[in-house]
Length: 157
Length: 157
Image 1: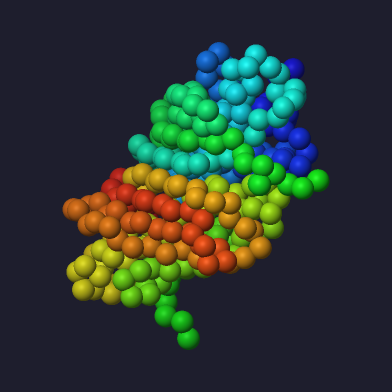
Image 2: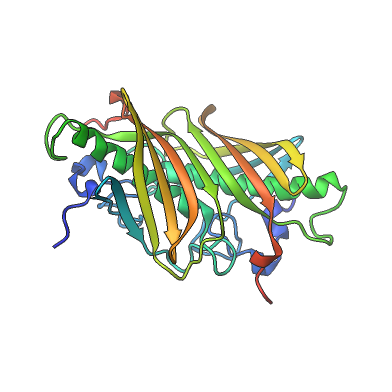
């Protein structure tokens, strides 16, 4: 059995994200896990996630890099404290900035592999670099500045 | 009657994009038009386009900025030559890079207004700056380097 994904530790109220919430039935529901120092996730694009016929839509690529990277930031924050992801206090991250370089057209007829790596941890900010590959080639590179979620954004429950 | 949107000039084979293709029934089908020197588009987020409850998912914001900006780049290329968008040769742009700064949480219960502006035209590259606003406040700022589509990406018809 596969180990639990980062996103499966999120509490119910924070599990509605279109990109990674396990409770959003319309969304991508990506699952990220550690693979040594890197985080990895795989996503199979739908046939309608197209840019021009045959290639993946850049907005989907940006979305996957965004959610995989903020998930990686959360997991890294726990790891830096030597804690499991279901221990308190919880760490949740939002995107401060997102940068994506599209290196080559991404074929739509293959699984997309995301790999993330923490570049820097600095107070409430964690910088994560991620790549998106298909058929063994890196098609896009991203950098996300993830920021620990301000209390004002936390849903009132 | 509203004037035709940039995206409505795209030929059928290039109208399947998830972000802006008029023929992609699953997609966002955004419509961008000139408003003086700026391009403008409005998008109403679906209730499931959520990040955490009450706020718009960052991946959707990145996607909208991406497609609005590449559409603006195409329209600007025609305008720079004093031509209508249905004249030959056609200009189509893909995203070389995308940068988004998330300035504040974007409320999901309001229309999202995109405004684009050409920053630079340099050979086959056009740099477009776009903002995304809700309820009169700028929630995100983006910069897209749009690159004229290489012939190798053009679908064979």
